[in-house]
Image (tube, rainbow over all chains, first blue to last red; front, side, top):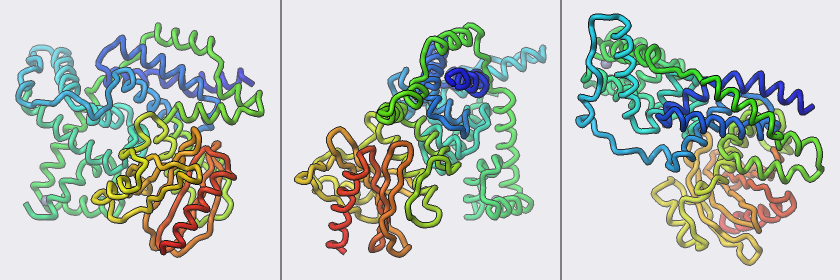
Length: 169
Length: 268
Ligand SMILES: [Zn+2]
């Protein structure tokens, strides 16, 4: 019986490892922290998996990963470092027009550094929506806020990204 | 900017995600065909979203992490599996585990309720399940350290005024210290997309959350449910709906609910 639970865990939760790691990397912005947090989250998920009777495994797991990430950091999503548009406007790497691959990488870097400068609650909403592809309903469940809050956070996060990208283009 | 444009701008992001109600989405779609300014805004937003989706980094977990996890899982018994299988007293353990897991537990509780899986209802109105699910999720969430109360006081004269200005109605806040249910505090939470009052009482080491909000529906008799080890008691009286939730045993929770009901019928 315990074997079949392990099989079920292997089939449903282990394949979500990249999703879990991606969320932790973006929330913690550190490779080693992210690995430790994901391992911790998986152990918790495993411990409680017997009580999980199906439903959305991804939202369930990402909730655990998010909570472990914030516990790791010992600070909530609201306690972000005050953000200053102007102070960071020159951070992005210069574009190299010669090489398509280089453009691609610099584009990626620009976006990543813009994302890293967002307050945590905007960053997590964007990662859950644009990378993980969660519905507003699931983002609300993972982040523990009403759907209306998810809606306005996403709108504001996108607006900020747009302004940041325009300025560094 | 015309007023409609302003509200349309606020909805564009949700429109891109297909998260607007159909009638609202149709309004926006219609407006975009006739308003060049909003249409340009929409195009710019689409470009931003497309850039984010194609360029934000999706990381691949290193193989060593996968191996570490497999090894750790193999070395750890899944506690709730063991609890379910072995001991008749397992329910207490499961409750503690559920409490420890906090928000994650709320997600699975919600999923279980959504599927109708473990919901045992006695009485109650139509569509009580989504409300029950949200109330229970809120209760489970509140058991995380620091999430229980926004105002912490054993004096109803502190707790009751705290709700003024935060809600458009005033919840009943009473003291039942003499009966062994001390007042702990209150918080505002969300049920059915609206803010609701939660008054928190204690009983030994157990927490009791009392949710209340105004309702247009008529009175409804007491309904009890047991979901994942939590007892829930709900009723409607005199324009208020109330939900009492706790992991306290059903008999004691019923006597507590009876105290509240008696107070309700005196005050209305
Ligand atoms: Zn317009």
